[in-house]
Length: 334
Image 1: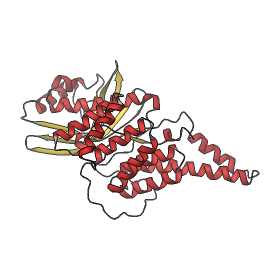
Image 2: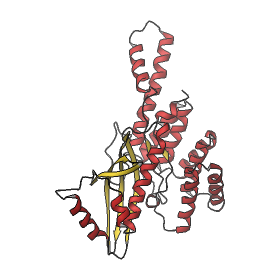
Image 3: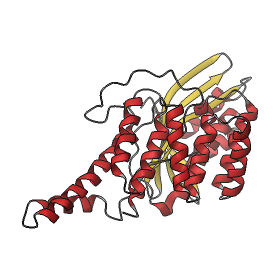
Image 4: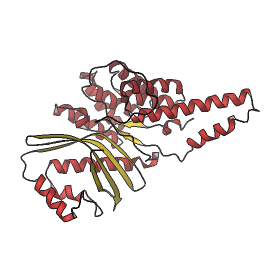
């Protein structure tokens, strides 16, 4: 079971300032610094940054979440479990710490504990697709244990081996897990009474993470980070009204919406973007999925320009070309 954790979808800390709902730029810089150090592989420095921040704000959920990820990445799994468990106690309304806690338990083959944590995540957020899928994987692992026990007790039972073979095939080494990118909200909503566990995965509600498809093996995690960086750079160029960088984020095979030609679309975008006194484009609840040189980024877009404020679901399809991830399709509202 040493590879069990790789079969479950994990949360990877990423700086999504809009998701965090921050208004304090100093705190935002602290999160950014810690995450940048972590993603650069400077885990000791990231840990020091997180500890320094938490010395004055020990209950801050974002930095505690980041600390838990750092502990996991440095192999201090028991400390990470303690961090995420305490987060679930202090912020039971946040589903992400429950999910990460379940992944850590699954990595230690503690599938009953993983099941309980995932059920709590789903009670907190019934439309949390990642938790639903992870719970299915945990049930499959528990079934595998039960089938193995059945064979030990009755080796002549011909009905068990085919079932066990199906589960082993499901968790074969070439299964590609998905990297999910998210962070707990800085100002969680008030806790509401949990309802019954749904029998199946609910459709994502507006503003929640969509269900990601298969994407990355462990060795391809760098590609996911590149896609994330490309999406955030695209949003930043839009916010800065940097048309060269903005239009440069789109590949030569980009399919403009409607019946527009590429040149007409570029002209229209330039007219809409440039000249405004202020534009802010924030990416929230970013989820990356895909296969090989094609990826899909789904997120909630918070757009503000002058007096206009608009939120919408956005999907970008990107392909890798010349070492860069470029947008080839853009849709809104799904």
